[in-house]
Image (cartoon, rainbow, N blue to C red; front, top):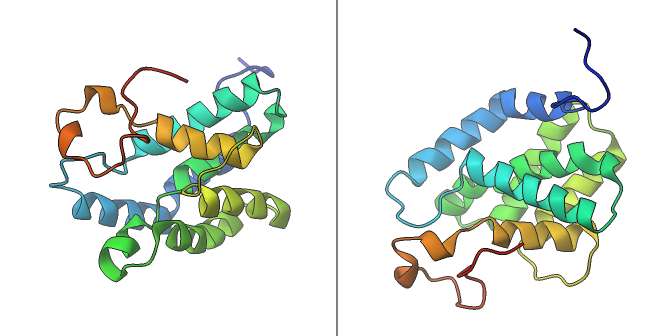
Length: 170
């Protein structure tokens, strides 16, 4: 049976290449090792995909071009991939993630313009942003992806109360 235009996974070939990329998997394993005993939110594939999915939903609600789906998912998978370098060398993870992502995106067939879009989302995901442009939606999704309201150690978390998600919202 041939896949139609609305098929699940359609147009996500390069995102799956990111997932299978050797450097990506090596970084992911290093993050897992560093966060093995972390009691607060971890930087897992579930978090990465939650950020991508929430960004995509927000973008659709704002009427932003649906053709950005693959770039949104690429940014979601890559936005925290340099977290291990923050643990090991004190490099801000958005900076480390962008450096690692550049090579992975190139290897996975993203054009220069596409890489710049994804790298902008990665670099700016920790900077508070207002509005409805894609970077603002990505920032918002990254914060919304955390279910603080259900966290058993929420009281010990060093996130400011203004950032904690204490209610279900979108």
